[in-house]
Amino acid sequence: MSDGKGWSFSHDLASAAQWTPGLREIFEYRDLGIKGGTKGDFVAHLIRHNGKKTKDEVQQWHVHDCTFQMVYVLNGWATFEYAGQGQRTIRKGDCINQVPGIPHREIACSEDFEVLEIVAPADFETRVVEAPKDQRQAAE
Image 1: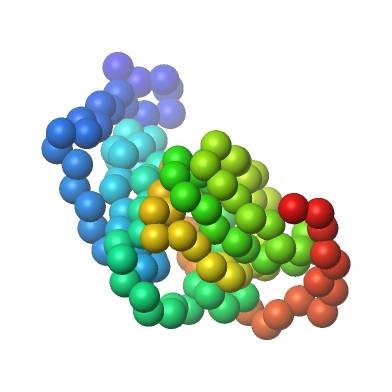
Image 2: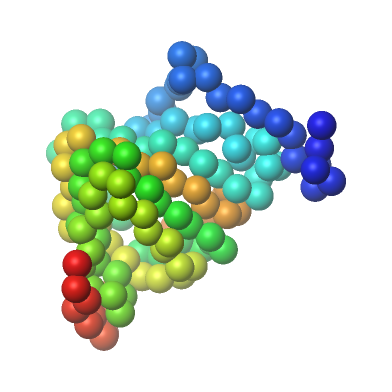
């Protein structure tokens, strides 16, 4: 059955979960089948810390070339810095609507950090950028 966009029904079974490496060296990713079901219009995945202590490019200032990005924290915490928004610590139960193209960087995260992330389109680019000149602090 399709909704007219060519999307298809999907059911991703937790019992058959496949965790794989992805964008971040310190995380592993579980695709939830939304990318295939929406023909690449969206991706939804779980991201969790894998115990590695390495630093990676995403701890530098960067942007994602996407039209929508939502992050919902399932476990743990992480501190990010966002251009024009200052440092924000997100914790279990928190949700971020990360506006398209906002420069940001990760400062730190807990070893039990796990999030649900939904992004459009599914195949988006991540680019390292220079630190923003204006880094106003916002209340956490």
